[in-house]
Length: 402
Image (cartoon, rainbow, N blue to C red; front, side):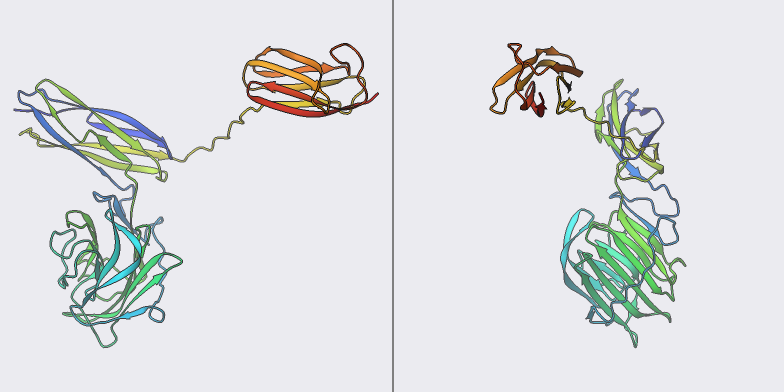
């Protein structure tokens, strides 16, 4: 049969912010049959108080985390559009923005009185379930999914914020079908794909599902399920983080006695200083080891500020100026090559050639004593020093006094 052998069995990298590095992982087959392998990765969260990213990179954090969102309730009951409220209600509304959800740009949303919204389904599922789930509804955002009903003062609102490019949905004083207590909460969709959930009043936190799931229901983030997690004044943020761990190729066929080198790329772009944990998962036809997991770590350090190195420029200066009887012309070359330095009058006629040779990079100097190429003194007045170095040309004015 095929066999799996790995080297190394763990892999790590340490990078400053916004840097990247490639490492190698060698998968060998000491068996007698061809080894078929597929590869995927998990980019895990550095903070175990928050949710590890799902397969699409979504992770969650709450207002109890130092780096989590702040709870700021925005009451839209007086400014938003009021929605119908009755048990088992769900309706579709357009959004005047594109909202990226698991790689799909959404322009419409289904809003349910049962405490969820969906970008795919208007099937009104009242009984909450675990997330993710292939059962309907999918493409789901569930701030408080339960069998909610219209109580005496239950209301629902929706409002679009054109300046902030956000859609806000508010459930207010929603009652439970089986238990007493009222719930008031919001979900906020930001155009960049960020999702905020806010909780003003929570009465029955042990009877709801909180989280998101993908279009096919195969991946998602379950923040809470029928547990005492939600409370008054809590905020939850769900967003996508950059994938810092990738592997290529993602599949292969290794003959007996052969090997396959996998490129493991660590990328600290967009990551804050922290220790990140990941996993490389290999699925093979090795009957004794059908799944192999290799731990990966990335230590991201603060980016060091690097002073920009000044780019040298061609320069030309004259001193003293005005002058009598002589002046020094200084110039600096950025590249070696032919160089010509001339003194010309205001009509552009050459008066004196000071330099006409090939010079190296660096500073140089020449002296003009106020005489022409014929050795005769020149009249008082204005002249120009013209430096030609390769394709570059500089001109400096100077005045001769007699």
